[in-house]
Amino acid sequence: MGRFLVLVALVMLAVWLLKRALARGEQGEIGRQPPVDGELVSCARCGMHLPRAEARAADGRLYCGEEHARLGPELP
Ligand SMILES: [Zn+2]
Image 1 (cartoon, helix red, strand yellow):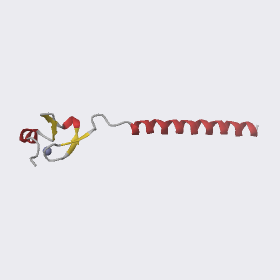
Image 2 (tube, rainbow, N blue to C red):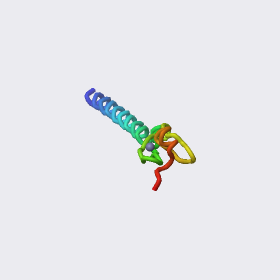
Image 3 (cartoon, helix red, strand yellow):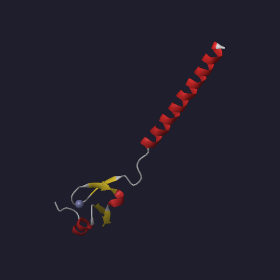
Image 4 (tube, rainbow, N blue to C red):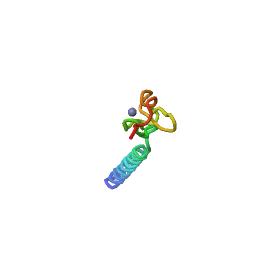
């Protein structure tokens, strides 16, 4: 009877370890995936970094806002 209980305890421990390993693996997958629309681009005028989804495009360049899109790229 004692051996049976030890066997049950070992099986439960194995199942718990397996579940924990699987949960950790799933978290790792999520952590490795890039965030949606999280790609950072830099403003052609001031160089500020912002998510691509928030950037304004003008003349094939990306800007941080309407004002800098209107002003155009920084002159050398
Ligand atoms: Zn800017």
